[in-house]
Amino acid sequence: MNKTDELKRIVATKNTTLDALAAHLGINRSTLYRKTKGGIEGLTLGEMKEITCFLGLCDSERRDIFGV
Image (cartoon, rainbow, N blue to C red; front, side):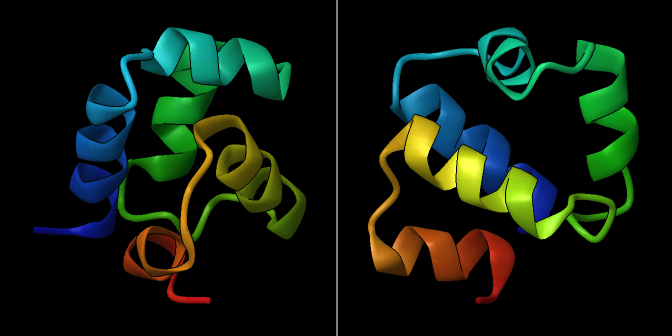
């Protein structure tokens, strides 16, 4: 499973949507899709931190998605 798929899986398990995540980040859903299209490399460190907080990720989930 690639990191984008892992992010989508965790978003679903947290009972939220990519639309809600994009809104929290202050970006359009299509922008979020473009940033994560080939992996999570398109995300800034700040966005990664915001996603971690928004989804309430534990350390292992954060590492699975972002590798940091």
